[in-house]
Image 1 (cartoon, one colour):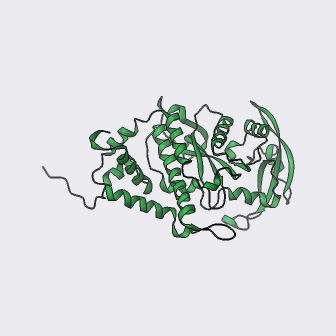
Image 2 (cartoon, one colour; image 1 turned 60 degrees about the vertical axis):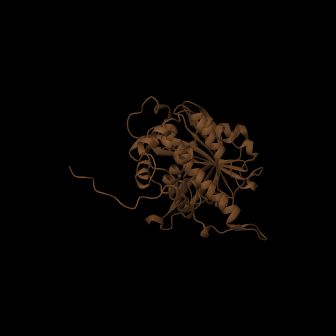
Image 3 (tube, helix red, strand yellow; image 1 turned 30 degrees about the vertical axis):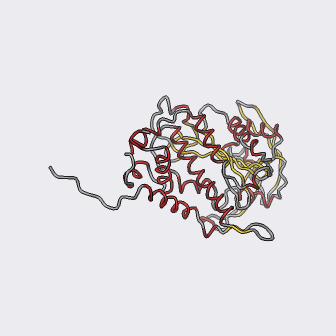
Length: 352
């Protein structure tokens, strides 16, 4: 790197920005002896090969996994994370601008698919993938499942979010004979899946999902009835629909099982604590920032499991309350500031 700075220096600056969920520009203004925001972005813009960067980031995500996860059979979840995109896409950005249902005032997003394991005290992201605008959902799922093979992880049960609810994905997972749970989208006024929302008891049925483009697929549908009980001022029955395959979970437990996939502190929510804020439309840089957040969450889980826990009869006890994610991020911030001290004063510009 020019200016006497090394890749290690750049990495430390990114760590400082991530640990504070800050922007590159503001981080450069807060530290002594670092390049300007434009200088940092200049070096980041040198990363142009999406496939190579993604491969290296996934290798990093898998480099510090709790040992017992390897060769295990955990439950696995695949999520689609959408980050709003505004403006007109350039030729570089356009391949990664994903169209979806309107959210935050836009129907355009940068989309990142992740696969992570669900196990007690071990909820870690195994791979991230920047979704191409012309990529099919089946291709996305296939890519992420293939990332599990080197780890010799056998999927006990696959959870997917409702963004994958489609004829091709369900047909493909059934062809793989993969055990899975997926929420169904309620559609139609009187027909479609809305016609299943009847009765006051949960029940199982078979349903034929239709698509004008992809044909039909027959699937097992679970209609789960729960009650609002005044939550958010609502009362009465709440219906939830789930497509399942090779899953033996009692109807009265299915909704809770699926909610467990998210948990109180999922990697999706946690990564927002350490994602660098940016307005750049460079898709490779954005992938780097999002993946760095997941890497830090993985590191936190690894440190908890290996150093902030004790083994005892009945299983390992992890003392999460002693080492919250924000505590680790504060430690990282302090470590970087030993190399690049924080600015503690400001000066007015000289008058002419």
